[in-house]
Length: 205
Image 1: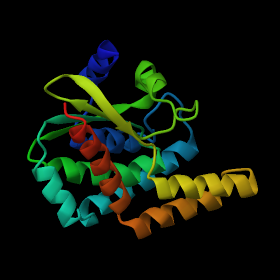
Image 2: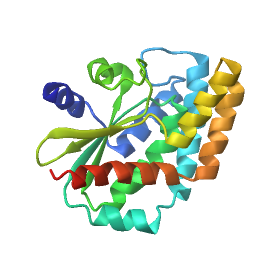
Image 3: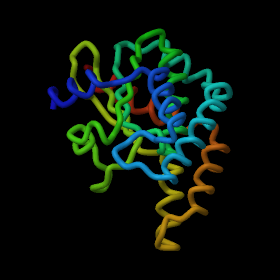
């Protein structure tokens, strides 16, 4: 497992590098990932605009900032993502703000799912390659302590209930999901990730 993480980190991007990679591909009418299609490029374009907005508007809760500033240990948050992923577009700007507020206690690194199949296969969700996935690594020990994702509990319940009722995930649920994120304002991501980190700290590294 350590070798898989090490290989992924070697190919990883900072948040600004990831944003530039997605934007540069869009100039050529492409998206990240091994599959290329008009719809994936369309979603990547929407997500790029969405992330531009969220980078400016996302606010961290005061209590979250306080907890981040007082972390006892240093971490790498390794995120598996793709530019076309709607959940990633909503979540990454929040995680980036958390990393920035940590005063370098959280080192945010991003890898592309399709370029890191070995890593993705270690973090499947119900057998599927759902993203984003946040892998929390203790920097001092160099080992994985926890993971989170692919979406907050409230968003996951929205998807689950819709699929139970209608049997499919169509354009309506995609719109409903984006409205859920809009109303949530990144709060669930902040709270859930901090709870994961606190659970690590309570278990004593």
